[in-house]
Image 1 (cartoon, rainbow, N blue to C red):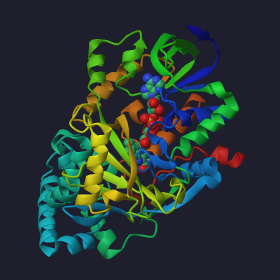
Image 2 (image 1 turned 90 degrees about the horizontal axis):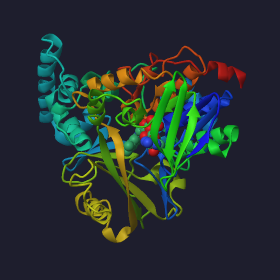
Image 3 (image 1 turned 135 degrees about the vertical axis):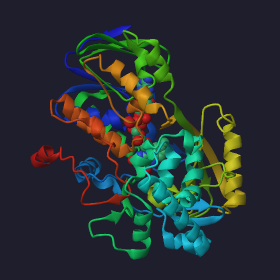
Image 4 (image 1 turned 90 degrees about the vertical axis):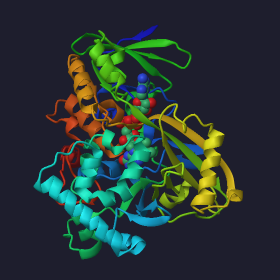
Length: 494
Ligand SMILES: Cc1cc2nc3c(=O)[nH]c(=O)nc-3n(C[C@H](O)[C@H](O)[C@H](O)COP(=O)(O)OP(=O)(O)OC[C@H]3O[C@@H](n4cnc5c(N)ncnc54)[C@H](O)[C@@H]3O)c2cc1C
């Protein structure tokens, strides 16, 4: 076992956006960092797969944050690589197309006045129950019904949520709704679509930034800067962290295995973990007790198979995303990379699609072969959505991701508390990121957390765990948005 000893050395587990952002922030301040990842690429879930010259994100990833300081950081990082994308998202529901976020006028057009009256009545009932009689919100279903009423919940939230999570909404925590759509209600929807009275400083997100050659360019740019500062060895790929030994405050040994199983140990003064929170306590030494192991085993993920299709056709859709509610269609969401950036396809007379099939390891979807999943998706595109003719398919390929979506079941918060209590005993160990904190982060959240953690390690009075905890609807920008103004000093220096 090779041993590399270094003083003042921050070892970061995971080269996804959170780990790289922490490493980036520390590197620019001259701190020595090593970033270790089990994959042979950087980016984690933000990877862009390249197949026959076509570039496929792991599901369409847009760059969006309400934090203008973070946007400025992003623009500095990405320079001339940024393109602007018009956002057109729709929901496919029972054979019809609905705009997303929901518009009341569009619902009336598609379903008629009786459905709207039905939606209005169920909304009034739920307003009485939850606002007047203070019925407690116990789960995801309650949270949606309290916000939108039973009818709209049933039309636009139940089926899609259950497709993503593979569980009835009654078995999922309401936290997901409060993190993703607090502040959005039937009134906001009416205001947006009918009254148009939103104030000038509130706006629905209608366009977003995107890296011209695929989302992976964001983590790649961070990794390039880390390597420029710390040398090639600073980012170690194909390396799975298997053990973290704690010898005392700020004194760790991190052990990782290469592809052939050969082990290396490096000394660290600080360890930053973005590997799943359900895994970390189980590789710590001294070991945790059975209650922590049980909590860790109980934190689960939903998996994802993305089917990347190449087509002999100029364009398939107008959408940036299309959400598919219907259960008889295997995939739950699709996007056409060319609609985000023409550079995603090598030949403009052709196009491509990414189809997201949500599943759980070993369930009936995961157990299908790649060929079966791909063929079934092509069939759904042709026969159910009528988007393509199967003769237009040049090729397809599948990508399987096990830890795609951290599941918020009804007990997840207790399990996290048990694990965090155990981890708080290791001085110099920090957790960050989506799987790392078991928090449903977008990439911007993970990057913001990482940058703030970097600042915290540098001695600033900031708390990265505050990110993505505010109950704000992510789709509307308002003048009330938090400005975590931590990049001002850097801004002034530039
Ligand atoms: C289908 C889909 C669509 C999405 N769309 C968007 C979007 O439009 N906009 C947006 O902002 N976000 C989007 N996201 C979310 C975004 O991908 C994540 O928030 C982001 O990648 C999280 O970054 P992270 O660094 O926290 O975690 P990850 O990206 O999961 O990185 C963790 C890293 O840790 C590594 N690792 C794990 N275990 C070990 C180990 N034992 N040893 C070494 N390395 C290890 C992994 O290989 C991985 O590289 C989407 C996610 C999915 C799945």
